[in-house]
Image (cartoon, rainbow, N blue to C red; front, side):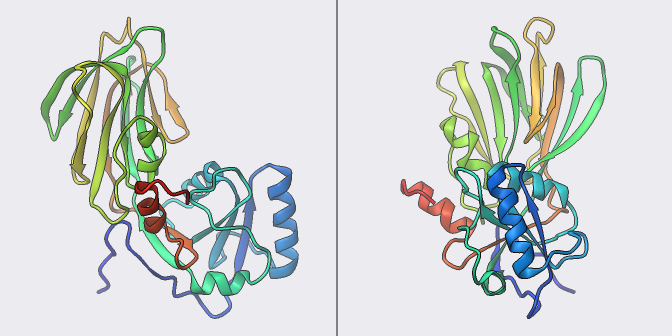
Length: 272
């Protein structure tokens, strides 16, 4: 029996000698042109039947592609045709098959959000970067935070709070002064957004087996939206968040530019 790799682990991709490729691209002209050219060079088959999906765009499109193939363990090799490209490889047209064959394989897991709105409607969504609770109006949100069923913070007054995976710890979480987490660390970050009270609270680093419940206080006067990556639920009343380790998301990166290497570089102030 093959044991699953720990979160964030990486290894050679172990691709077939001549892997079949599918190209998906964002709606920008640059990405669409790249997809057409690469399809002519390397062929292009249905993404569900391909050995590897090549995503052309920015980080936002990479997240969309990972969501699209959630649960399939389909390896995704991204090339940057967007702006930042933290999750992406450098764009080059030549030697793509060789690059994919030599790529390192990073395995990460999503967060699962189970949210209940003020009308009692329950929705579930998954997030690869973070789950955020954000104020909807001019008034700050008022939140109660429980960890594994025990109230740890009876009242947080803030613009919001977020829970980030190691992958997402360099994104919104870092902008909110949250910690950068190593990709291989079995941890999640709980980070306040512009906390007003208690002023001293800077968040927490928690095991990724933790169950987090956030209850919205005074929801009629202080409405809050719950957001899992690009999915948003308005007028949230209670949100449950935990990592879903049953789902593996596979990203391929060029040797020396793996996701954990990029996260490590971020901790020392270097650009990816």
